[in-house]
Image (cartoon, rainbow, N blue to C red; front, side, top):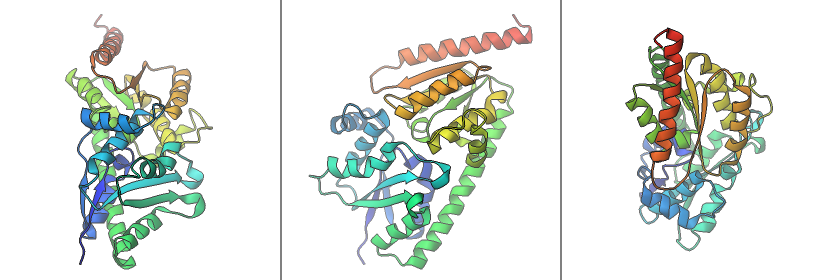
Amino acid sequence: MILVKIGIPRALLYYKYSYLWETFFEELGIEYIVSPDTNKEIINKGMTYAIDEACLSSKIYLGHVEWLIDKCDYILVPRVSNYGSAGTVCTKFQAIYDIVKNTFRDRNINILYYNIDVKSADFEVRAFLKMGKVLNKRKSQCMRAYLIAKQAEKTAKIMDEKYQEQLLNENKIKILLIAHHYNINDKYIGAPIIDYIRDTGAVPIIGDIANKKEAIEKSYEITETLPWEYNKELIGSIAMYKDRVDGIILISSFNCGPDSLVNEIIIRRVKDKPILNLIVDGQEGSAGMETRLESFLDIIKFKKDDYSGII
């Protein structure tokens, strides 16, 4: 029996599907390797391969793909086009498979295809069955592994939501962080902001952890016209949490098209909470970011103390 190893880039959709993919491969007895946390070397590699107009998150993804080359037999590169009536996604998720294939066309890499296009009847379960077929696994084996993986994913989400509910009940300053899963969980983009907020004694509340179905329904309270599924989930989390937090921070990677529009909508329509709009680029240094965070948190603290009669 020929053993294969799958490489998974720790970027973009990894943070949405990690439980699903990893449990699926484990149940099939397939070895996999995940690229390390984003670091400066990975970013620099990604910038070398990407065009200037690409967003920082896409550049980071290419850096992770490059890190995996020659360390595995296949690299999992998903393509997501749409979720049917639930909405579509940013074009980078539709194009990333072709971008990777063409960018590294001289490196002889094998790409493991994973495609979700609900409007063309390419549902999630079909994507897993097709992956399993490429890996020489029986359909029944793949279906069993997929169902176990879905349960693992569901359990992890429930635990995250319960923990966040505990944080929302804490008697501290709470800051709602609105950022895509691939940004808020990235060690270079989101992690430094979360760490800074925690170090000040405030509590970061992650918008992306909100229950997705409920968030989509609540998103229509702010806007009914957004086409992008992931942005609808985030804007819905604002509607869910805004009365339970003291401020909102919008976090985007540089050059993100959908966020540039959606953040403007949020700033114009959510008037009863202080909002800070942060854009993370690939440049060195964090002093400017920390200064903005410090000022924002000071304003919230002064405002809260004023309402409490301390000032």
